[in-house]
Length: 193
Image (cartoon, rainbow, N blue to C red; front, side, top):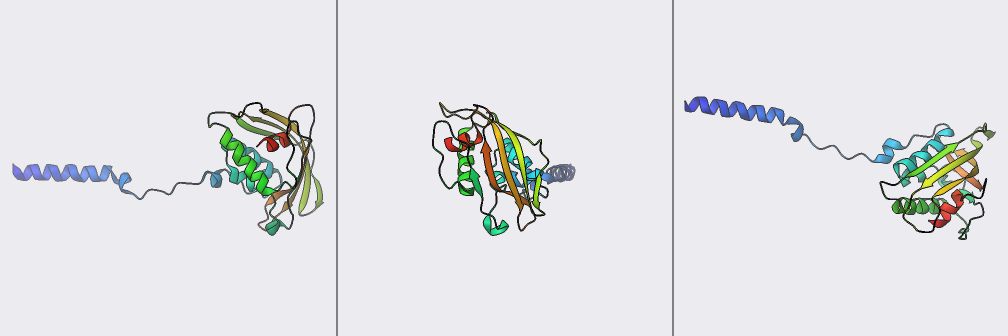
């Protein structure tokens, strides 16, 4: 009888160990969301998809990777803002300013709030040469942030030039923001944050 108990207990232990095998594996390292949502921009249109993804997934590293770094593309990023409503625009706007504003925007938008960018492109891109191209885009941006007295809807048009970097990825090296109405523009959003 004792022997039968030991066999049953041993059998139950084996069954328990086999059924818990998944719990005993090494845990997988967490994946960085930006690696999942960043699409290598092997064609210029994917840069705009990455900008939209940066807003949708609230990932500033995707946003930052859309812009030219002079050490990898040979082009220094430049932004020419539209006239802004209530605040002045900082001079010499660069990639670090882009990243800083976007981090501030994400921090001011609760995770359950709407943060959405929609870009449409009705123009065929103009090719300067094989390694650069320019687009005119229309954008609509909704940012339900927590700051008081600041617009939450932004609309406009932008003239954007892209270049291939040394990874053969397209990046933005020039951006001119253009208002299309009395609505707040992307320049206003950048100036606010």
